[in-house]
Image 1 (cartoon, rainbow, N blue to C red):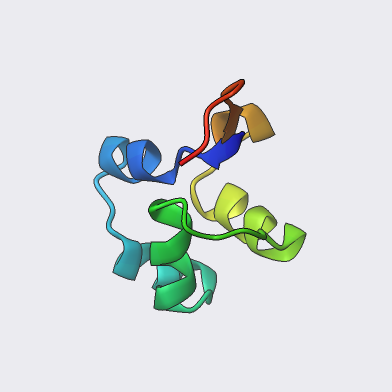
Image 2: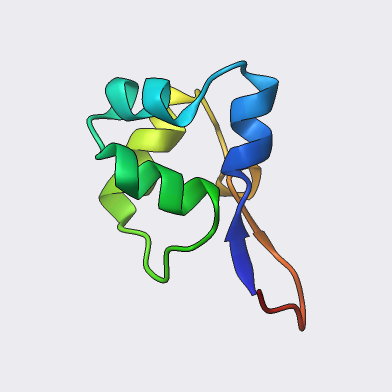
Length: 71
């Protein structure tokens, strides 16, 4: 299963979902669903905005794969 590592990234960068929503222009509710890995679909546009805002260089910094694990 693929999952976003947004919760860890926000903690490391001392940000919260509200601040990330303001930085990216993505709705707060969408950000919180992404942080909690409740989203079934991530738009490439939103992922790019997050990568830019958090100054990430590789998608592996944002997305991970956990084999055989479902939430």
